[in-house]
Amino acid sequence: MEDDIVFKLRLFLKQQLENKLESQWGVNTAQYLNSTLQNMAIEADLVLDLHTGPSSTRHIYSPNFLAEQATQFQIETVISIPEKFAGALDEASFTPLVKLAELFAKQGLTFEYRVQAYTVELGSQENICLEQAKMDADGILNYLQTHQFIDGFKPLPAKDVTITDLSQYRTLFSKYAGMVEYLAKPGQIVQKGQVLARVLNSLEFDTQEAIKEIVSPVSGIVILHYPSAAVQIGTQLFKIAAQ
Image (tube, rainbow, N blue to C red; front, top):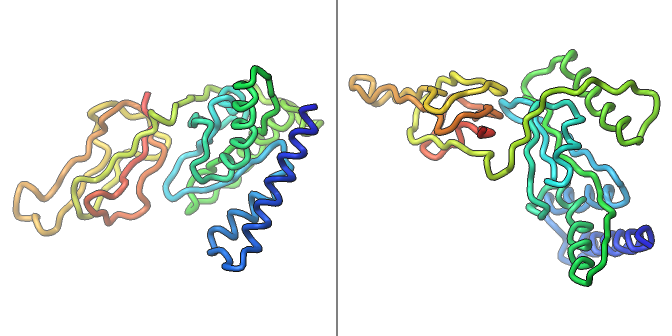
């Protein structure tokens, strides 16, 4: 019964995406790419959206109901996100079935079919490390083996992984413009009040306002920082998984 419902839902979604792409008015480049990727992923029970960031440590976005399973990727930090669509491919993959289950629940019916979908952030795009790439691949294989998508891979020993709710994934904006010296690095554990960076304002070199210290409002793990040394007021300096 569930398989038949899922088949019909996927058929419907596929048709909607194709209708969108075939619109007389056309679509912009981002809509074309997004819709094409969603169309490719519609029939999958597992969707891995692999990314790299600017100056970033490895982390993974997981829907709340899969957060514990996501630790099997052996990535140090899991960001647990709500089961709603906010524009990402993983969300587009799991939300239709979640919403369908909610509709069934209102009728007193149980619907348990789910798509396993994650955004996997594989560190900084500016750096390549073959040893780390091997570890990343092993982590993905570990997940695939654990959930019987593949055979023949020896499961890895459990690893300490931090799960952080999206509400605790905080962005620190710069209050100053100038050149920034980053003191805290991606993946580093920091304490509340710790100096994360110093901003140098060349227009104030002859005053006590020449150097401004940026301190952390929370204790947690630095996930990424802005890739450039030149910042403006309001620049997203750091993202921190608060603990």
